[in-house]
Image (cartoon, rainbow over all chains, first blue to last red; front, top):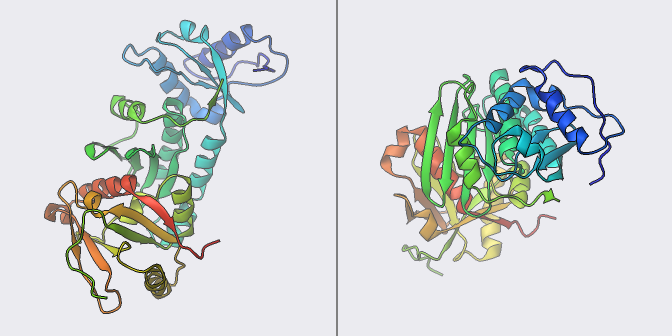
Length: 217
Length: 138
């Protein structure tokens, strides 16, 4: 991978300096030369905070850990949960087009609801769905299907093509329902608020799905 | 030809898709759970017995259903009767004058008033389905 990154003025992300720390750590390993930034624009402050927490969660040890960088997404492989060791890992680059496609579907959800004769999803459902889509992509990068339902929910749907799926339904009252189907074995969790999401239930379910092959090392 | 009332486990049952966006999703991965949601308060999901129906008749029946909705017909999300009848569901031949190949996937009775249960069943049916494009869709 040829890196053309450059240290960018710190963002105002809180906890302070995390995003800059991520970027500077990457840059130290990649002799960056041009401009890029680890901004909150793509992932949102809460998305970055989720990532930060995930990296320091002793129970969270994915094979790949995602780093939020506009245009490209970096994946250091690690079996360690510490950020330092994660950054020392192998770094790969993937195309974030699948995330952008899902975000485009989200932006079209109101039109789709109108075409299908569904009740319109609320602004809150759309905002929650956007944040959670990005966070779920961070956990399991794949082409999420995003669409409205007849109950004015926004579905963030992750089918793995092997008879399994994880679906997060963001309702118009600010809550959510997570449905997990693993070849006919079902689990589900109902949330009155999405503030705690993605939680361990969602993370574990996404981790159990077969990965999609978008990673190029 | 007389259409038998008993449905073999290996029979393909098709749920008609009348949305272009659903068809795109189906080509990319699979249909959404919306395709397999029953009507509010109902436990029946209408399907066509594609193994028994000659293709021209099946598409003609689906085309007529699409016209009645003022929509286009794009294809079927197909499940086997064995899968459709799993997890407490059953399948039943329910021929109509217009469609001798009509059948219903019937959800457990308790699902009628439980939307989460309906969605759970819809998810499983969507996950197990495969896409069969309308032969005349380019």
